[in-house]
Image (cartoon, rainbow, N blue to C red; front, side, top):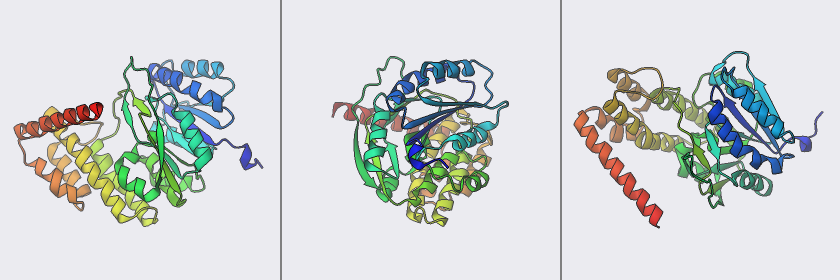
Length: 336
């Protein structure tokens, strides 16, 4: 039997498919950060049957970083995100699990900061609180600092932001993986449910401030309205039922996601006639879906439902108001 101290501290996993150029940039930034911690980190890439140059990119990096505990698994056929995620979970044997997307760029210094925090603080999870958009010319140089926080305080403060699993490094409890994988098969938030179920350990969280992730734009493959009104809600209600979180946390996550995300997605849909991801695209069907999923929550009636009655001109006014406020806020922060 393998002794626990022979297992890695951290498993970093990337599921990928047909994004060779984007993946290459991500690995160029990530692997040099892993190298100094080669004895503590297991690195996994699960390739979902790519037909571009993804395999060559991975193998070239594996040769160049032969000292790293580097696992490359390739599916013979595309198994969908679910199958690729499942393989990442299956291969990960570190104490902590960090699932990145192939379009995530981990800012220089973040891997060191994460590993140091895991070693010194033994947190239930680490959260990278600041993200941004990848810009080719950007040099990825940021100052990072951290702060301990209770689990409950972190869940309240960061609510729906914790659904971005690329920003959360959490305990890798695998005892019930098969149950969760079956229960949440096809759920866009399957990574989030694994994070939620790791909260059975009621320790502390560590929040890392300063830009930690930069994301290269990629098309969304899931229907954002269905994902948040049905799939996220299912995850939260499951966690409440298992007493991992309170009902108040569930309400906070959903209400804030309605205000900050779904309302904006709805406005964009009405103005552009397009939807992020596939699925229902008819206005009446979308509004029916949102009502069914969100009606029990305060911000459905307060924020979302009033948008249904507005004309395109009314929605444009709201859109430009939000844009102006965002620009002013950004300027204030940059001048602070």
